[in-house]
Length: 138
Image 1 (cartoon, rainbow, N blue to C red):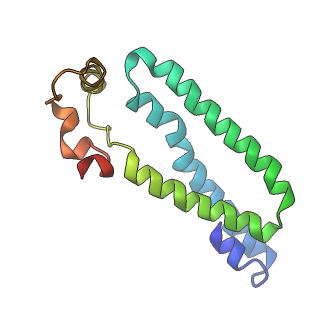
Image 2 (cartoon, helix red, strand yellow):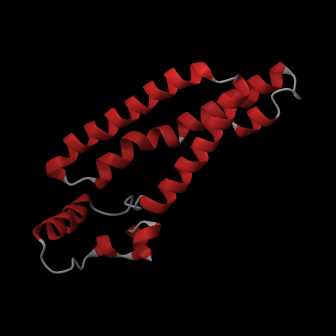
């Protein structure tokens, strides 16, 4: 998106269309999939559906705000805001989302139960550095 913004007046329309289609395709291929995959893995079983619904509703509110506000910006500003928002989202995801692909969801539930009960520190596979977010590793 940032490339489309920077080169908006410099490239032919057909090249901009392909740049936009490429960014849209890869945006739907990766980041869009995480909006429904990550909540199913990181929330405890008892609250998973409620938290997943809250996460989905937050995404819809963000889309609504963007649809309303983007009407008031130029096309170049639209591409720039979208691109920088994508970079920010990538950075936040890298910092805060744990890697749970090889972890049993039961272990995540056990960890949450320890945290919520206030008992001693959980000592299981969910606390292994490969399963923690970047911020949790520090």
